[in-house]
Image (tube, rainbow, N blue to C red):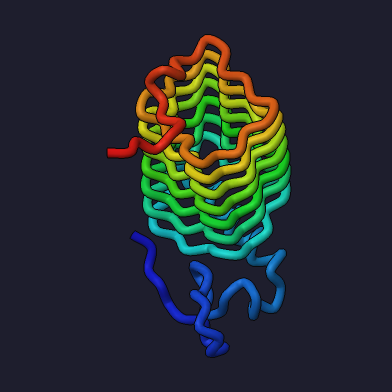
Length: 196
């Protein structure tokens, strides 16, 4: 799991992987994002990196494998995650705009409080993911396995979950508008909390 080192500026935030400073105190956050992007491009397997709060634009993370990484509070625009494999990674409070996760294999990730706009997760394994409190708009999850994932208290608008496995997928408290669950097993999903 990623190592947490406190920012040398004394702000209490965590320092970026390969640096003594956090994203706020880095001399150039955009250069830090480029440095991390180049590091990722040079590897097939990425383990235990801590890079919260960076802004990635047009980065290509496709085909990589990530284990135990922290991207909390980062933003991603026009980024490719196609065919990516991720295990136990954290994207809490991150933002995603126009990103492609098609054909991804994601297990035990947290996107709590994140925002997704115009992203695709088609033909993916999205197992045991936490989308709690997320804002999701104009996204597609078609032909994906969302087994045991959580969309609790999420806001989901104009998005498709067509032909998905929704077994044990929780939508409790989720606000839904313009959603299609066509050909998905909604009977095995949980939309209301059971009262005992």
